[in-house]
Image (cartoon, rainbow, N blue to C red; front, top):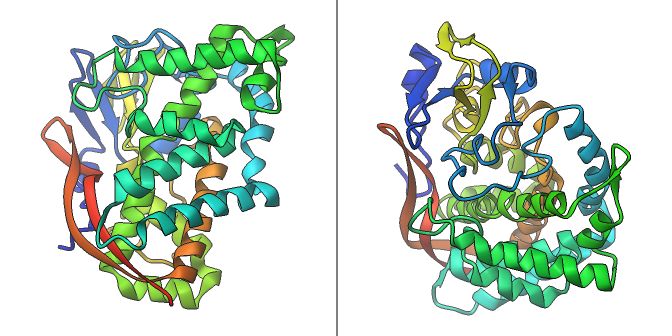
Length: 386
């Protein structure tokens, strides 16, 4: 097995039972594993709600480390749709040419910062600063604020060593409060100013709601984007033939991005809370208990994906759910896809070869199952085109 492989720990349970029970801080979760069931539950918000106690639909639960509702992530229709109507135009800006030019400049500069090193840590030296600097473009805040984001590490909301440490979030809250106060005094062309002047369902957005939107903007696309960039470079290092093919066939890069996102599935799953007694795969779900929509398992469902454990760069049938499904499709998906498209373009243009030197894997534990989501560190080296 190659060092860039991501084995599927859910295969046997998905085929035999369709669900898997785990305990999360004495609040049990029934993981839904098959694609059809994940999609069905995600669509059925009237039965499986996102609008529970703030932090409860996240797995592991964040109930003990925050009380601010992440918006629109922790809302159900119709209010969820009202907030999406406000936010979608802003988060679709990555489709614009000038936005892409700014992102491309960041990617090129980040690549140039590591290409002359004999080896570099892909996370610390590349993926983390790239994600942080790209986030300044998404929010349209000054570029130098990325240095603050970088200083927070790969998780802005959770402590690196203790996911139940509430103290880590305080630095993010302090930043958000400061930015809101700044923009009240001096509005600009940025996400904070947009929200301060916005109404949803005829009501002015509150500061707490603004805070919830910004927290989601930071937390929702942080470690997921970092893992996606890192895993992609690790894969290309161990599969030079894939890098060569992407260089020779630029027309397949869009499909390749969707395939890599499917295969790596940067976010393992996301929870819902049952409004009433229900059943999933003939297994009982009690009212007010939690299920999780296991995107990572659904994306390896052999009844849907041919050769699901292989990366097929030009895969044509690819109904993956790595960005969620139905009304809760990821708000930042356009930004993430654009970043990956530009990254592949720049790497294909400028990098001749990537060498995989060493790595420490990042393994999540779900009950008795172990799932690789990325790396704690990944040492690479580059050979660039002359």
